[in-house]
Each structure stands twice: as C-alpha cells, then as structure tokens.
Length: 609
Image (cartoon, rainbow, N blue to C red):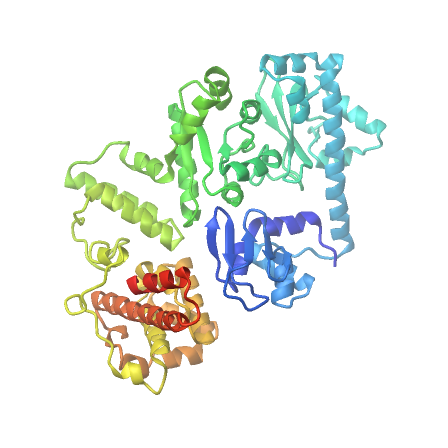
C-alpha cells in the first residue's frame, strides 16, 4: 500500500520519536532536543545512541543504524512498514487511508492543489512587477522592503479585478473546480466563480517543505477585511499552519529561540532586522497543534504581544491554552511590546539590540498566570491569599504532566506563603502534599527513620530465599505505589531511575507510571483494575501479597500516608545505597589492575555518595 508523503509527515509531526524510542531505550537529554542512551543494537557501557527530537531522527554510532520512527519500529520491533504506519497512525489519532481508487484520486488531487498553488504564486509574483501591480509594489517599498526581500518571501500582487487569475488559469487549462478547491476562486450564490484575492498584496503561505499551500492578502487602500487568508482546503489547515516556518525552523534550532508574532509583516520585518527565526499564526489564536510544533523546534518559544489591554488579554489566552499541554522540559515566555509598537517597528526604530532586550526580559508562563490571577499585586490578607491559592490550584488541575504540575504548585505556594505552610497544609493534602515535611529528602538529605514513621526493613529481607534483597525492595516500592497512588507526585521521578532486575516488574512499573501520569485521579482500586486489564494479573497477585507485606508493613492499603511515604523513601534509599556499594566494591577490586587517577577519583566519588 502506498502512503502519501503528507500522511507520513503528519504522523511524524504528531508522534514524538523520543516517546517511541524511550519505551525501549532509557534516554537522557544532554542538550536541547538531543538525547543519548545505550545502543539497543549492541551491548555497550558507554552511550553511543543518539536521538534528535526536533529532526525526528536517531543514529547509533556503534552500528551505524539510523532512521525515523517508522524505521525504528521496523528494526527494533520487527514490524513491516505498513504495520509500523498503522501503529503510529493510531497513536497520532489518524485514520489509515484506504487504498481504494477514491483514495488514490484524493492523493492525486492534493498533488494537483499544491501544483495549482505554485502556478498562482508565480502569477502573483509576475503581476507585482507589471503595471497593474504598481500599487502593491509601492506599498511594499513604503514598508521598507527591497527587491531581495520581496523575492526571498515570494511576495506578489492580485489585480483589482474579478477574473484575472481565473483567466490566466483557463489559458493553462486548469479547471475552475480545482481552483475552487484550492481556495483561489469564490463561488457566489448566483453567477460565475470569481477571484478570491483582488487588489491585494499577496503573501504565499508555505509548509515546512516550502510547498505553497495557501495565500494571505493585504488590501491596498480602504476596504475590509484588511487581511484575508485562503479558506481551509485539503492542504491548508489554519490550526497547523505557521507563516514562515519553512524558513525559521533551522535558524531557530541554531539560535535556541523562536519568536511568535502576529502577522506577515512582523515576520518579514524581523527577518530584515537579522532575526530570521520568527513565525506567525494565520488569522487564528495559537492552537495546541501550533504549540506542539513550536516545541519540536525549540523548548522555549517567545510569544510577542502588544503591550495594550487587548495584547495582554491575548497573552493570557495563550497561557491558558498552553497550560494543559505543558510538560517538564518545555517552557514559554511572553514579551509585551510598548503600546503602539509591533516587532517590525521596534527593530526599525530602536534597532535589533532593543528588540533582543525585550526578548531577554520576556516573562515566563508562570508569571503570566500569576498576573492573570492576582492582577499583578501580591495579596496581603489571609483571605486574599486563600482565594488566590484556590484559583492557582484550579489552574494546576488543568496540567496533565505530573512533574510540571507539582513544580507549578510548589512555586506558587511558596510565592504566596514563603517558608510558612499554608493553612491546614499536611502531608498528602492537595497538590502540594508533603512539601514542608519532605524538603530534606528533596535536597538530598535522609529521613530519620525513628522519628518520621518509616518502617525499618526486616533483616529477613537480606536473607530471604523467596527473592533477592534488591528485588524484594523493588516489589515493595511498587506495592506501596499501587496501594497508595496519592504518593505518585513525590516518588515518580525517583521510581523512574530504578533499574528493575525482573522484566515483568519493570513492565509493571512503566505501566503504573504511565497510567498515573495520564490520570492523577486514579485511586488504588481503579489503578489495579487497569493493570489487570493490561495483563499483569499474575505479577500483581505475587506483588500484593504477604510475602511482600511481611517485610514492609507500610506498603499495606490501610497504612497512613505519612508512614507510607517515609517507608517508601527509606526503601528507595536502601536500594540505591546498595547499588552504590556494589559498584564501589567492583571499582575497588579493579584498582589492582587500573591505578589511573581517574579510577581513584571514581572510588572517592562513590564513597562520598
């Protein structure tokens, strides 16, 4: 079966290669968008496997294997190409195309639409230089654009008549039906189709590959609307398209920054000023799809808005839109421009340095949320603080990523209350459960097991014949989490670092973490039911049993949350301490053969740990 390039590109756009590869390989981010791990194709101790998130590409330097998400499923999971496409399409929420005559005709039509758009673009470019394009060219000159910039952005002009483009296309034997579907002709209630764009400067809209998929037009003189975009077509969806993305993506990766502004001239004006990594949405507010596409290029796009009341409202809307889909490692900043200015005018009047300063001073997402909730003032009375706390907690509930949600809540709680706990704060309560009771552990300190409720592991765990001590501790950590999902926020990151010795436990660990991250409202009963439905019946039966509880009473369902968390921490510390001790023994034994300074430094580091 043949799949169109557009369909495969849409899957690549929607599905993160880091997520796909990360199910098999433990990846660590070394630089923005660059992840490394141990090769899945060969046994090694030093990571040589590289995943580039923004490019959707992986490469193994040990074996020279490389490819994209489709190649990965073929090489690692042994799927055929159609199976890989089907699996990833399901993850992306896309319906598989049907290999029918109708579908093949549809693909051909999409190809025809991009071809006719290219023909129209060339027509508009020529018209700009013709006598009928004089008004458009004069407008661009007044805006400070020279011939090189006009050519670079392929700017053009649509004649002020109802049938100029239609007549040109007729001479090229292009049927009206195709022009209508491309959004180039408008169909009236009565009469013949006529040109969609008339008397306007034309800005071609291109996709990531540089293909012309639509147009925007700016009217010359009086008239409404001032700006007009093509209607949506099979190749142009406003919720996905960003003006300038085909030029901005590569420079943005290099600079580590991408600017999002409001319109075509802002993008072109910034490019003229040397800032060639700007984009703009097309007649719509930023969508979830826009934000996800931006984050694939850089981790912290900067959104530029006018500094007036309307601009601030737009910034608040963008922040609200971003909050539910934010994840750890992603960020947004907001630059509010001086009233009456736009990005182009700031650069032209004050120079690039002034605009760079605005970008450097851009407020983070958290600050925008704070301003929205508080009006920019610090609440002073307990009543005001409690009201703000509730509103911020409501915002936090919209965040799906557990790590980001926790840090979001912690930040605002401390901003409101300082080092004092808010009224009625207690371990296990609200989104900040345990924040004040466990700071020592978060900072690297250890709990006093005699005073903080941790249950000391029975010495029998060290000599248990049922399971090695480390595997028993792994089972205890999982049992406590499954019986008490409300400790998830506090233990998620730590549990993710444990290298489980038994494959079935590791799979269960991963499923439990994914389930709780997707729905933090799961209680123990719902979580167990979900795990049972995923085929973990035998593993759960062995895990939630007396063979585990006899060594760690705190893991039982009826244990108070404070005791569960303290016991979990104690078990985790013992498990990780054992790993360090084992490694230390190996390194010390190896000193007999390796007396290098590096080996001695490794021993010293492990002993400090």
